[in-house]
Amino acid sequence: MIVVTGATRGLGRAICDRLLLKNFPVFGLARNVDNIPFPCISCDVSSFDSVKEAAQYFKKNSIKVTGLINVAGIALMNLAIMTPPAATQSIINTNLLGTIYCCQLFAPLMLRNRQGSIINFSTIAVALGLKGESIYVASKAGVEGFTRSFAREVADFEVKVNCIAPGPIDTSLLNGITPAQIEKIVSQQIFPKQFTTESVADLVELLLDPRSGPLSGQVLYVGGV
Amino acid sequence: MSSSDTVKNEVFSQIARLLGDKSPPVSDEMLLIGSNSALDSMKLVELCLALEDRAADLGFEFDWTSEAAMSRSRSMFRTAGSLAAEFNSQMEASK
Image 1: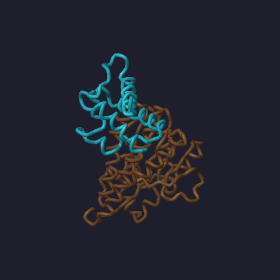
Image 2: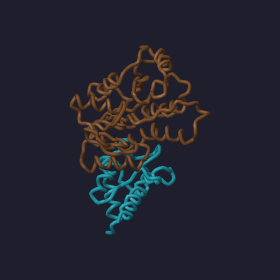
Image 3: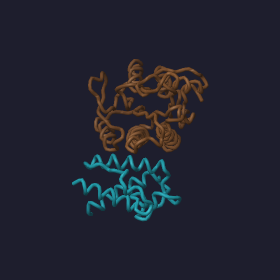
Image 4: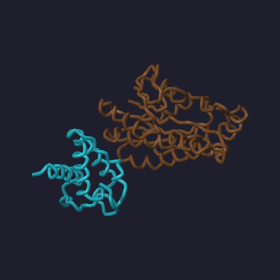
C-alpha cells in the first residue's frame, strides 16, 4: 500500500490519481476525506497523536505499507518580519513536523518488511533562497535536512528516503502569486519552464520503482537548479 | 517468579537474540546506547520492533517515543535493566 498525505487535493490528489491509474494500491490521509474515490482516513499531520492513530490503523488491520508520500503542506508568501507567530507555527507544524511525524510513525511499518520508499516534499525555493518565502523555505529546508539524515537511519532496513522539490506547479498553493512572479522563479531553473503535476508524478513513480533502489537521501529539484 | 521477572527475562532474551551466540550474558547493567553500547543502531531499532510486537501479544502498546527515551541519564534505553523496567512499567500502566 502506498500512503499519501494531503491526498485529497492539489499535488497530493494528482499523485494519487496517477498511482491509481498505474494500478498502485493507494491509501490517502487528509484532514477532510469526504467524497474521495479511494481509501482514505482523516489525519492532521501536524498532530503527532493524529498521525499515530493513522499508523495504528494500518498496523491493526495488517495493511502492508511499501511507500509513504508526504505531500501535505501549506505555503506562505510573506516577509518574515510581517508574519504573525501563529502563521509561522502553522507552517512549521504542518510542513516540517508533519513530515517528521509521518516518517517516525510509518517507517516502522516498512522497517519490519525491510522494504519501502519514502518521498518527502520540499520546494525549489530552498535552493533559490526566494525572497518573501523565508519561513516556508525554512520549513522545507528542514524537510531536506531531515530527509538526508533519516535516509541513513533506515538504510540498513532497505528503506529509501528521498525528497522531490518542485518549482511553481499549478496548484492551489500558488494562489496569490502573479504570473510575473512565477516567470521570475521559473527563469532561474536549469530548464526555465513551468512544469506540471504530471512531471512530479513521473518522479514519484521513479522513486517507487525498485530500479531506483540505490537512490536515497537525495533531493530532486524539478526543473533543476 | 514474579511477573516483572518474567518480563525482564523476555526483554533480556530479545537482546541476547540480537547480540548472537558469542555475546556476553545480558545483565541489568549492559549498556544499550552510547559509544560502549552492546547494540548498534540497527539492532536497537530491531529490538524496539520486537518489543512492540511482544507488547501487542501481551495486550498493550509499547511506546518507545516517550519522553523517557530522550535523556541519556534517564533514557529507558540506557541499560538492559532500565529497558526491562520501562517495558514492565508500561505494561502495568495499561492494566
